[in-house]
Length: 194
Image 1 (tube, rainbow, N blue to C red):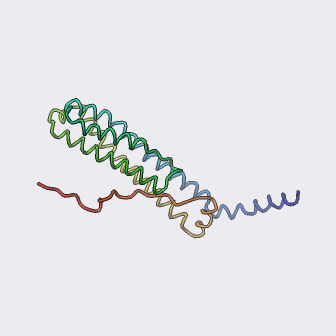
Image 2: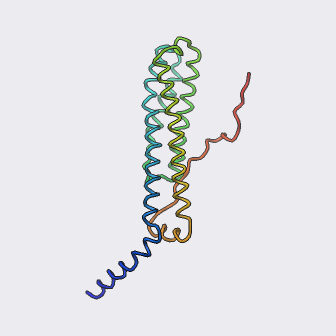
Image 3: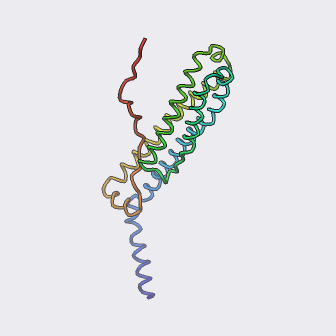
């Protein structure tokens, strides 16, 4: 019994160099980079969701009869903020569900901003202009965060597919991470009519 235990410990110690050469630590670092990048994506989407009530309230003061638009924005925001995924839960289906909710919110925001075009006083309102600038900045941050996530996932997925790491990655439970997909119809240029 004692000799078996000593042999097991000796075998474990002998395997340490082999395990270190399989880049386990590198896989952990890359996995954590993906997790951190995903957290930043969520953070930026949350920032956008936090700005929306103020934007709706500002527009509502000028365009009270646009209730349907306000309702759509409010519903889309509620749906988008209810779809929460941790980095550990990321798979193709959950990422698609998250992305669909965010795309719905983006469409609702576009409708809200289109409503503002009909109200010159609203467009001149400092609160509205400030919120519009903040929202635009947030959209840029979302794009940047998604880009960084995409890069981290690409690096991680490439690493776990390379030989011999692919063997060890499976042993340690490292699985391919999902990427964002383009919105349906994104391959077609939008029509501009004058």
